Amino acid sequence: MGTVFAGYSQGLNHFEVDPAVAKMMRAVIPADHEDRLRQMGALAGGEVLEVGQAVDRAGTAELRSHDIDGNVVDEAVISADHHRLYERLRSLIATPETPAGFAGHFAEGYLLADPGLYCLITLSTQVATALRDLHPDPAPYLERLYHGPSWGATWFTEANAGSDLGATLTRATPSGGGHILDDGDKYFASGAGLADLALAGARIGDRAGVKGLGLFLVDKFRPDGIPNFRVLRLKDKLGTRGVPTGEVELAGTTATLLAEPGEGIHRILESLTLARVANSVSSAGIARIATLESTIRGGRRSAFGGILAGHPLFARDLVEMRMEHLGIAALSLQMASYFQQLRQAPIPNSPDFLLLRFMSHISKVHTAQTAASVTQRAMECFGGNGFIEEFPIARWHREALVLPIWEGTANVHSLDASEAAARMKSFDPVIDELSGPVPAKLRQGYVKRLQDLLPVLVEQPWERKTAVTQLGLLARAAALYRFAEAEPALEEIARLCLLERPPAAGFRLDPALEFNL
Image (tube, rainbow, N blue to C red; front, side, top):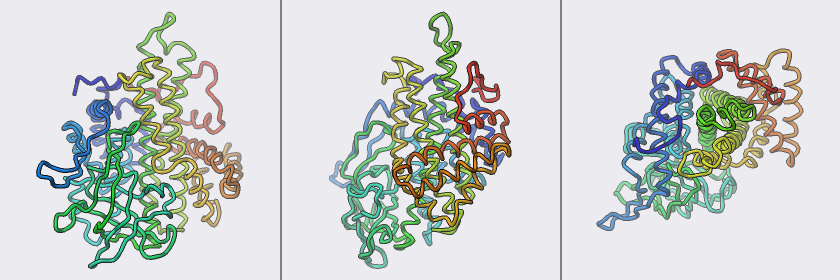
């Protein structure tokens, strides 16, 4: 794969190149997991970049519907290099069962970054998590996910029911101790053609809305070996070509019930929360790559009598991109820690469960939007070469554009954050958690801003997205202050974030926050 140019950061260890984020990671995961992160950093700077670039250039995977004997197979045809890389990444699915837990898994996902490649790992982790929590005998399925050959998927979206899960039409009928799913048109089915264990939502009985949904496990084959669902086609996407996305038909599909109606929607939301944290760490990882590539570019390219990084305007671009990146890296790793600590809180209305839900919405919106902004800025840093598909910066911007859409748009998250906040008996859990690390001299003003924003989020529908945007900045500042205990140099950019001030003329990052190049 060495013939593929995948960027200036190709060949670098993406863990070792960023000591500041490494310190953040050490604050939330066990010390003995660092070797694993170092290995992941080397993989991220090598095979992940190279295969990701090659897969993107190759375009949409081919769907092979039948084998040579006419048997239905519905397989996505991907390259041997792509297959090998997926197998190297498979171990991330089992990381939550190690002492590093989910925080370790998400730290690895941050280093992986590529949302196409990370998507299949996240989907499989969602399935494994649901199996461990809900299935009476998960071991045989977990063996398939942890060691092969199986991959997982979550198929909730339908043509008529995107974010509105209450409009789901797939129906489940009891049959022989299990259920049969019919009328299932799963319209955005990531992992289609690769996944053979999927979580699916389906309606049981006549109960309307989300309360009528059960959560089911669907295997690719029935016990008699007959295919259990059909992959109708694969979609041609702007990016994330590392994972095939298609349309799956569930008709006469045997399924195992994991959660009854009533509980089902909460288990679906629990699974989606995991995916939203993964979306956040992937956003931060892409911002890392874009900022790192731009930093190296600024030190290599000469114009107007000097290197680009020596010109004040370009230097300011690099400083601001790095501040943005470090901010969302802190927020996403803080979310990884929250998920580790709070995910098993009683559902649906315990304070800890609502806090996790609320923060996942705020973090997902803020990190995704920031990643798209940083990659756009990186394209400008590269000039015309940033817009040419021969070089990788254009790809990273395309990859980033899916992040505000995957796992729900900003509008949807604003509604869900409002609903989670309204369920709280008071806003105190959010205020206490976010204001805790803020310095005492700034805390009163910080709390006042939260106290003003949270009622707007709940009570003023027109302003909800604006409130989520402002809450994202406050959450980012709080995360930076929290990690400043591990890296004191973060405190200055936390202060600037909190005050929403740009760096002053001639501002330079503390050397502790620079890339190790």
